[in-house]
Amino acid sequence: MKTALIALAMTSALALAACNPLEVGPVGNASVPEPRKPVDLGRYVGTWYEQGRYEASFQKGCEGVTAQYAAKPDGTVSVVNSCRQGSPTGPVRSADASARVVDGSNGAKLKVTFFWPIQGDYWVLDRADDYSWAIVGEPSGRYLWLLTRSRQISPKQYAALVSRAQALGYDTTLVRRTQQ
Image (cartoon, rainbow, N blue to C red; front, side, top):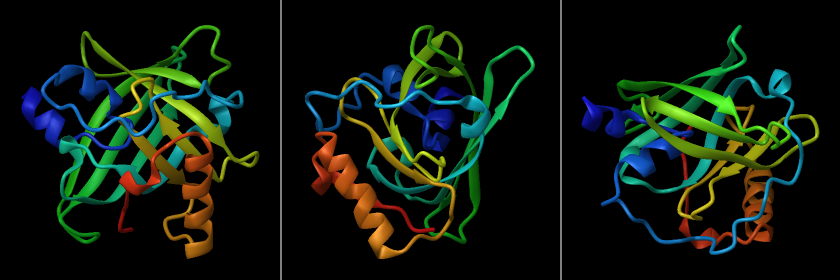
């Protein structure tokens, strides 16, 4: 079952990296910065579309990647990550998780759990003031996600996201564009 979850995990699957010590990708940022802005979870919840990522084994073959966040009454956040296997029209795969805000992080750091007791870090490193895009990573520098509220974005918008990730210290030659 754990292997199946690893195969299905998407955007906020940082938690799974901690579960699989054999998966050690290249470090794309040796000095991951602290998150730049506070995050209002009320504005962050909803659907995000992955525009680019550092490739990880648990996302191999994933296109049309989305992450759906919803606030729960107990203050945690439900997470449903989905992708389409092989192409933007392929069969849907999904993984459910729960996240909690890290105390003292201004809402910008979450601990995500796909299966108890394993938790992973999810850092909203930067975001648009209107929450139209976000750049997400974690402390090791091995994982990076470029997210937007829009399924389709222009080449200029994509280039701006990649440029912002580069300004945050990421090796953008490792970014893989996600088909939406």
